[in-house]
Image 1: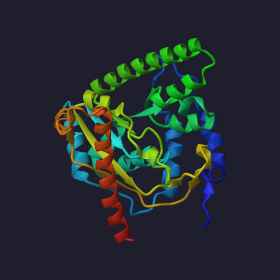
Image 2: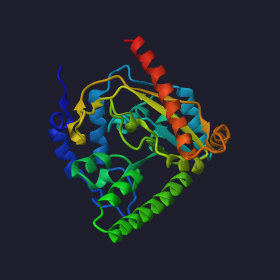
Image 3: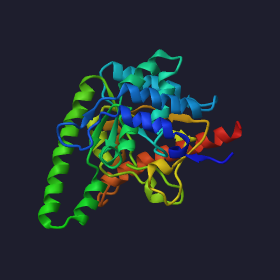
Length: 302
């Protein structure tokens, strides 16, 4: 059966989603922490439920549970997740929330995602989609670089850089508050969805190194399967094709961030020009190896 775009398949859904929307259309330093809109969360759960095949499951359950227990006992927790589609987070939280394991259900309630500003500012429907989940909004480095290049004057570029600093400082404070409340920060280290044939979209962002310095423990979560498929050359998120799939979320063993970072950096040559990038390259390598193993297993079962 030929897949439809999510815009065509869920036209009425998006009308309701938009009518429920209450999130800010502009981000500044006062509104970077945005609580989930429960009305839209229910709609997103229904979209996931419609397209999640019965064999969907978690691998490495013991790692998820170890991570949860350490967070519950006071450790600050970071989830580093692969990113293939805009339903990665909705499907992950839906599956946690509908788990028979009460620890995983509680973990789902603790997750706060890091989101780029454009999810709020670029398109009202995308904003309504994004506000289904609690998030801390940041001004991504990629966006700042692009905006500075497009600035009409040096003064305009400086103003944009100042705006980015204010938003990101507020985001850091919001993340610190999340840690104190026992919430878990989830970030996509690539900063964008992976597009087949465009390997640069799977490269980790060097600023993710700062997250490793800020948290006690981390979990690398790979994703196999997706209910949304990006159409090559189409950046419009609503042009993604939707259809049922089996999803597998796999967790690595829990990483002790400071030790992991220290041990890896010590393996680099003294004259390494960009140790921060090498550090996140290592994280992406862990995710890729985990993904390939899970995919081979998934295909062998089908």
